[in-house]
Length: 352
Image (tube, rainbow, N blue to C red; front, top):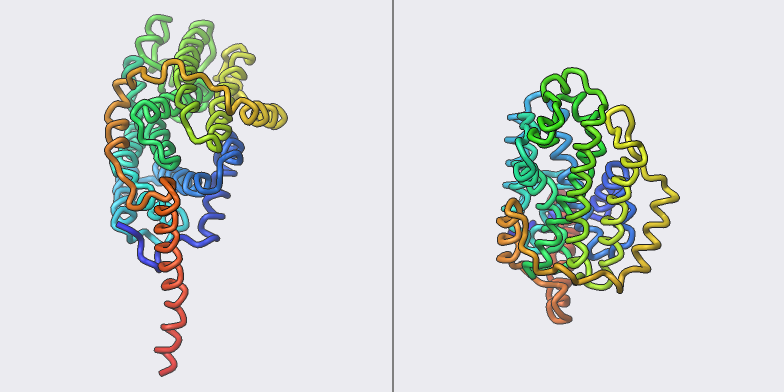
């Protein structure tokens, strides 16, 4: 349902969302600079909503209450009555405008619930299931923001999201362990003689752990490669931004490797100068992403997200031709004008 005129996001709301992205994910923010504004602004809105949701689970003491509050925020956003928060107003406008099915943000909240219960993952498929919820869901949303509903393109967007999440896990092994969380596949740890409980009690780097991290980065690299065919099918003015995200996050994995795969006592960082080089490389490569593997089936864990995204339809389709763009703009300006008239009408009533 579309937000009411009073609930439309303002320029300040969008600026607040961009600020959250800039402070919360320097890598994704850098990549977003190469996206056209029609995609960058709603992408920032999605990120801001997700970031505040994640922070609520991490920071608030009552995690069950925090999850209930998040579901209420989601209810209100989809009803067109968002809370008076910049991220929620921008998110509500984006989900209506682009027809984002509720299945996708619901998956994200489910992943946050798994975080809250400190769930562990017995094998790689179960870790895929977690990454599908917290990252492939966002990849599918990004595909919709770029007006991509081809199931193969959405599947590759999910691959990219999962690859990025696996890279984050490989980078944050020590940080997560010190917070009482363990995302590495338990069967891989057992093969290296690493007891999960003992590791959480006293996280330390070992050659066996290095081999586990290397396997995780190899799986991420496999999915980055699969994702490239999806980048090749994106609108030309979107390829550089998404390609930059793929290249910068993969570089985080290379930084982990340069640290000897020790992500317990060290945190891998991609220097700003290197990010600038990768941004330039992504722009130069926009015409040259390969199409090989486009029709690979989605990972089992992400299949339901792909199906939900493909069946979704935007309320209005501003990216599907001139007439639709005009219809959407007329609707938007009408709602903005009515919103601007509200304060004046209230003043007139008060003066009577």
